[in-house]
Amino acid sequence: MRKELLLAASAFVVSVAGSSVAHAQCVLKGTVIDAATNEPLVGVTVALQGTPNKVFTDNDGKFVIKSAKTKCSLQFSSIGFESTTLASNHAGEYDFGFIPMAGASIALKDAVVTTRAVARKTPVALTTLGAVAIEERVGTADLPKVLETTPGVYVMREGGGYGDTKVNMRGFKSENVAVLVNGVSMNDMEWGGVYWSNWAGLTDVASSIQTQRGLGAAKVSTPSVGGSINIVTKTTDARKGGAFSYGMGNDGYNKLAFSLSTGRTADGWALTVMGGKTWGDGYIQGTDFRAWNYFFSLSKELSKNHLLTFTAFGAPQVHNKRSNYDGLTVQGWQEVGKYMRPGEQYLYNATYGYDRYGQIRHSQQNIYHKPQLQLQHLWQIDRTSSLNTVAYLSLGYGGGESGQGTQEYSSGWYGSNNGILATQFRNADGTFAYGKIQEMNAASESGSKMVMSMSKNLHKWVG
Image 1 (cartoon, rainbow, N blue to C red):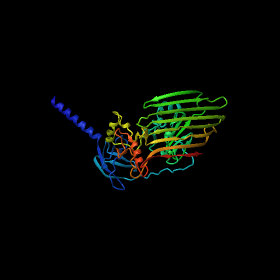
Image 2: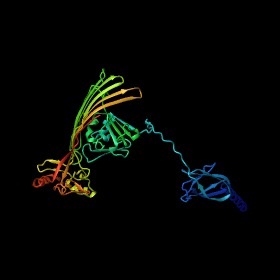
Image 3: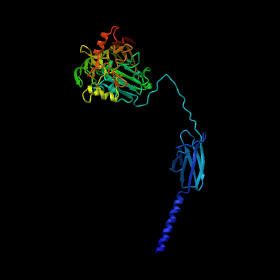
Image 4: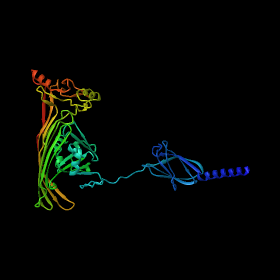
């Protein structure tokens, strides 16, 4: 009985061994190299044709692949190289040695330059926010904050003052982002950017905000390398009726607003009037603000395809801010904590203080008013074409205050130096010592050493 079991076991072992040989009759290996440089190629796909088996070359260009048949073909492929096929009819283990692969020449399609723009196929090239979405998102925030969730748009506060917001689009700064109101550019002629504090009041009158990302999707070429933001105000789409609202928030924030609209009358007229006032102390120390906004729109449907609209709007404002150059190191912020309540050291304003008469003073203040008048004609040519023509007048006046000094005291206005709080003109309670500056100027026999100046921006734009 034992002899029969041994014979059966031996037969089983022989059978398994024979099966193993039948399913792995050859082992193929080799090294794949670049035909031009003789350097080993990494990650080349080595596929056994007719089967799902494939391997990849290692860091030395080497590979090992098994085949159940002695007669087989190997295909070598890699991006940037011409595919190579080798036939094999070897039993057991066989080394192909070096297998060269030649580089592939890829012909690019011709570039065609035309005067017609190609329609963007990207689903997120254009984003439009309606009046309801704007009202839900803005709350007590600045106008650009409604764009925070728009793909490719980055919004953040600067200086902590009212309207001190910057908008980057696709990585480009505001100098490369075109901002328009009803298709009219609002970018500053000197530096190309936008002072959003001048347009903070438009949140109440915006019918929609259109964001187009990328130069190819924008309607204007300069300075819209990053894209464009077009704010469309309300016209005949304003519903008939009126409203009055009052809102309040933290840090003394208050907002009053009213609106009246006739809606579209039977004979095609529409009149909308809006106004409001916003004021508060600001989140950052010494960043109090006062702002107003007004809007007037009179529209007339001349015919089914022609609409004429006259619009006047503006948002005068006065706000104080914290200088962008008064940043402190971690140690510096910890040190100013002794001047503030626990946990509020980051609200500290290094240039906030009082003069010798007890009046609050700031070294960074902005005052501006930029009203605009627009006469717009919309012609709906057909179902797919329209022509929009706008004539406008924009008047700007105001500016920003800053400190100036003689060569000896030119840096005296700085709230900090290299991230450390400046102490040359600093009171014991941490406020900036404007009174000491006034006393120094009064005692000087050669004129004032440090003064406050205003850089004015007065302009008239017609287009």
